Image (cartoon, rainbow, N blue to C red; front, side, top):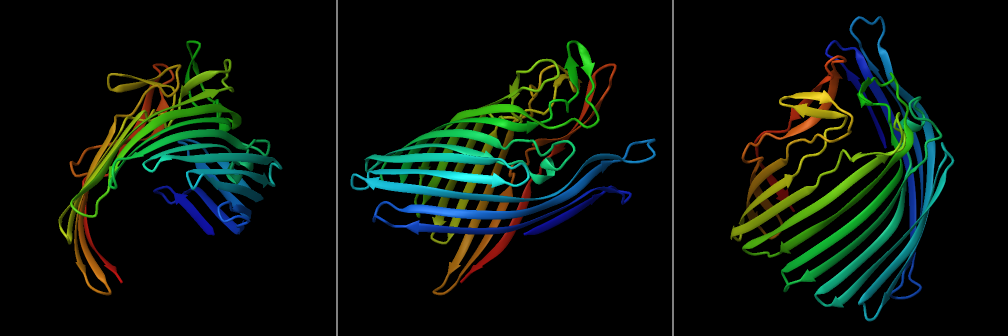
Length: 388
């Protein structure tokens, strides 16, 4: 796999460039030592290459400012083994396994155990349990950057999930799922953001370093109801509640600063419905809603203006909402099928916003300046799909 990019400003001066390459080799094996209890094992090796830079042009400066640069290669090797068991006439399914990973740049090896269980209490009632430890190594772009370093540790996570599923007849099911995740050693730049600290303005250094100073958690639940049918009405609805918090141990004035994650979306609702008017004509409608994500940084809002504050990620975007509509008309023959479709994304033409950038602040008044981009407007489309 290979990919590269370059980024220039409107006057065709370079802002950044990068190159990424990867060779991958994988192999897996399954031993059916028992008709119901397979043993699986596998090995993977990845040879990675990553290089790039980012610069910034400043008004009045004789030369551009180098924001970041990186260049390096790495070998990531890993292997796993997993044993599964089935008992009580298929009413109990158990699985346990372990994974080993190693990266050549930092030389850190990690062992990650996992386990899961499925219990069929009745033909219509199912309980699922899962637990695992997971590891993710920092990218080469961080390990070889002057802002990071080879001493950065891999990120680690402990994840547990419990799910209960109940079927109401052949076409309807209800599922409730609960999860808890704990993360540690996340790379973070504690000194990156300007803020008010002890009543005074804190000005970040030019190139703040990354540290493994961030810990976090994510907890929540999701309720899902679905009705499946090849004829007439079909659809599903889901609601999810989640809470994701972070604790930074690298704050300039004492550790332990707590704040919501930048991806902390408390409420999410998805609704989908489909109806078959005729055997060859189908209508569908989908509505999605999500409460606002935090705006990253130490910001508060006074009227229509933004100001620096001493608490991180307390200001949130407006909720996201979108409605999509689609109609399909099919012509089916013995050896081929033709489908004509029409679709309208964001049917109500709602204006949704996304955070783009923090553009600076006034050092005397602490007023801050942001860029919030609008997402796509109403988007109609049509097309043909030919299947043979």
